[in-house]
Amino acid sequence: MDNKPVHLTDANFEETIKHNSLVLVDFWAGWCGPCRALAPTIEELAKEYAGKVLVAKLDVDKNPSTAEQFQVFSIPTVVVIKNCCEVERIVGHCTKQRYVDALEKHLK
View (cartoon, rainbow, N blue to C red):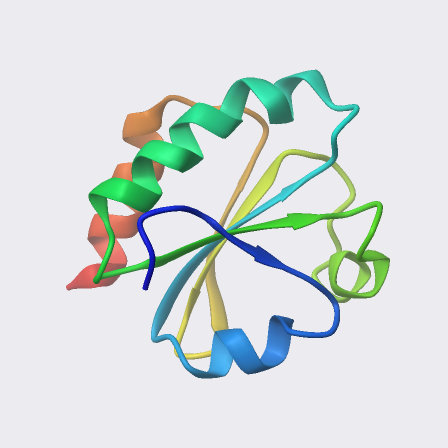
């Protein structure tokens, strides 16, 4: 696990999720203002949870299949995946604490 967000694609999504027990995925797009505002928080989470949680980003414009599979209709959408199953979804830009709370709940 890295201390920077991993960039996921339609091609590597399933394999990456399979090999990590807890994953936070930021579904985003370059043209989305709230997504750009959330980016520094995602970077911080990747550093703070390195070795415990895989923090990842998926560009919905470049990877529409995975976005469709997860029924991402608004961005940013952050999905927490534990043991290959979605366990939490946060839609819209929230405080860093909201994401920390979600991760801490599922780290137990």
